Amino acid sequence: MSFTQQELDYLASQRLGRLATVQPNGTLQVSPVGFHYNPDTATIDIQGYNMALLLLVVWMVR
Image 1 (cartoon, rainbow, N blue to C red):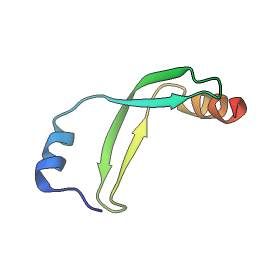
Image 2 (image 1 turned 90 degrees about the vertical axis):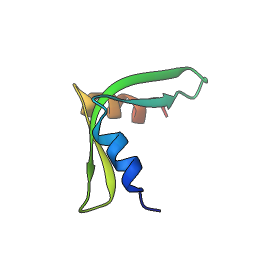
Image 3 (image 1 turned 180 degrees about the vertical axis):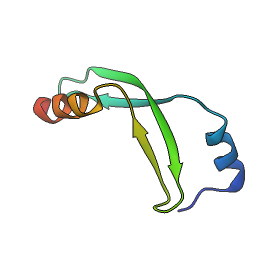
C-alpha cells in the first residue's frame, strides 16, 4: 500500500508523531517521536531521544 500525495503532504506538515506500545500487563505508553517519510523504501522512519533504550525496554518487557 502506498501513500497518496494528500497523505504525504499531511505527513510533511507535521513536526511530531506518536509511538504507542502496549506492555504485557496492558499498560499503554505513548512517546512523541520525530519522523520522516523515506521515499526510497516507502516507509515512515522514526527517531527520537533514547530510541534505542526505548526499544530495548520494550523488548525486555516482552
